[in-house]
Image (cartoon, rainbow, N blue to C red; front, top):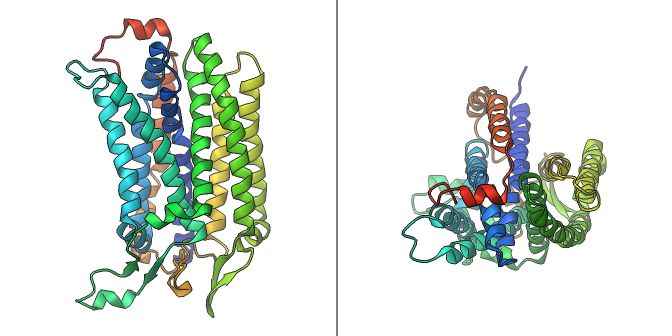
Length: 380
């Protein structure tokens, strides 16, 4: 028999999958940061036209991620998206300028020039992963909010949750959140180079991308090791029938108590490093994005699991531990989760279509000759 607790666990699993896919797809943002690293117009045009076939996926996945959170764990949605709105508005703004840039960069009548839109794409590339990493960091390290469900019966109270005057911007100045933010940023840059090496058939471009990959990967590894060390040494909020309390080394305990998490994070890390190393040191190797991409999915899945499972509050409140959100106290009703679970059975078919479309678009690699022949209406 499917229980309410099973449904809550199931939907946290789906949220974890969406979060992992979102981090993987931020290779688009990482690739865009390369636009400010070269004056070679052909190099930049190939990058933009390669990423232009994928840019909608990141934003769409972000929207689906938010929508799934709203439907399955509405208290988190109302607390974070509704309370820390300045942080989320900044993230949304970076995606708006991305959409505008891909639409108008090479169109006739562009009075601002391609450079302006390339700069906007680079801004999205740098700040979207950084700010999303900061936002996700609050899932581990907590945020400054309180929750009072009784406010829903109080006509004079406008919201269930209360935040300070900064409404999420304070998260940007938390060093632990910033460590995760820069980890996600340099991971996206690493994945961006790996994807472009796979998708562009041009030796000079490949050589340039390998240089960027080497530097970005080294910085990513440093930040990733630092983040893991900080996370495992940090306290987390644990709950049971007696209440909520801060517990030292909670995330470290979760890794060992859920042994499969330790296996997955080690396997994922190894796959990421294999994809990077093979691409850098093996001449002509272009499949690093697949190894590293799978590794990223495994690692991010594990991080979400140790944040939400094993009686752990996935959104700790720094101001009031009893306001911390868990998959038990923040989920939708059993009826809602059951109904959505039926709809979720269509997800494998959607994923199959995405894979099919992806493979179809990638059958022909991008070359400099193709870019020169392409009309301005077909370019990004």
